[in-house]
Length: 381
Ligand code: ADP
Image 1 (tube, rainbow, N blue to C red):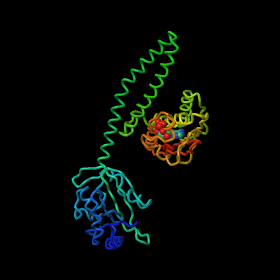
Image 2: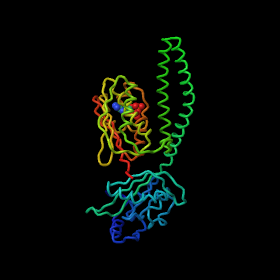
Image 3: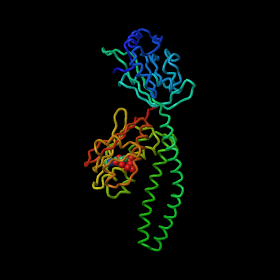
Image 4: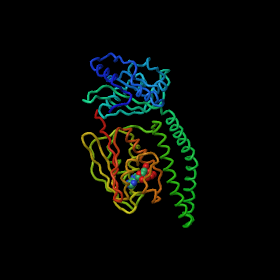
């Protein structure tokens, strides 16, 4: 790929730098070709940085100057890792980013970057390898955008969700309690009609409770908090227990569990239970006309997999990827007025990611879906 702010002179010196290992190449200013230079300098919102093969800065536009506080003269020849936080440097992120760029053609990341005055901002960055026609590596182009505002908005949204769900929870707990007392009373006096209305109210209370639990979980997961203990356990009994529990609440469906696993996983059990509950309640909810749900347990050398298959409405092909997005609901379920908030799968994917696992969906609209997750084996000590 040819990046517009490179020019022959720069690329030639980059090529020469192949032989230099430690020392940064001696290119002081990207430019020379006025057109390119004007183009690059015109971009003020994006930092455009050129690096040699080792990650030393050889070019720096006005956008980079504005965003990061270094004048071009002050940064050229320095290694780009100084833009990362100390933590990220320790974790070798700068090197990993360039390696990823080499492997996949682009290294993308969102992380904190450090300005010259040591202040930090949330940035999205993309590194692309620069190669000559023969495919030899010449260096990298890195483009950075300031995402502080978006990050701040997200934080505000999460704070609001967290606060609102706490506030909503308290009165609901007391509504639930009084409804239970009233239920008992109506049972005693055998008031059938009242009981039937009350049961409907209680069902709605449970729905609302679930939503609030989801909202609280979103904010908990986002702030990295966990109330429970990480442990090593076998998934089989958790899967069987969760399936039984849900079968009892949905007499319309039969849940068949097949397969077994021998390897343990390492996680907070309640988290994985939550993912399973989400898969199974969705399978029930989105297959109102079907009876059977298949749950499969399997494993390979590295991981353990659980899949939940239903024979319901499925998901339109082009919307499959988005079901793991926050608040996303596919068009076919919205039109059927099936209740939901599009949070369950988002939370599930965050949980599985947290344990370095994988979450997937296969689906054919009108035929059914298979949701699955895999978790790595717990390391044997
Ligand atoms: P909710 O069910 O509350 O909308 P989820 O995050 O659990 O939220 O699911 C997001 C969306 O993914 C659903 O709204 C639906 O469009 C789709 N979906 C999830 N599971 C299934 C399924 N088993 N069959 C069909 N669509 C599904």
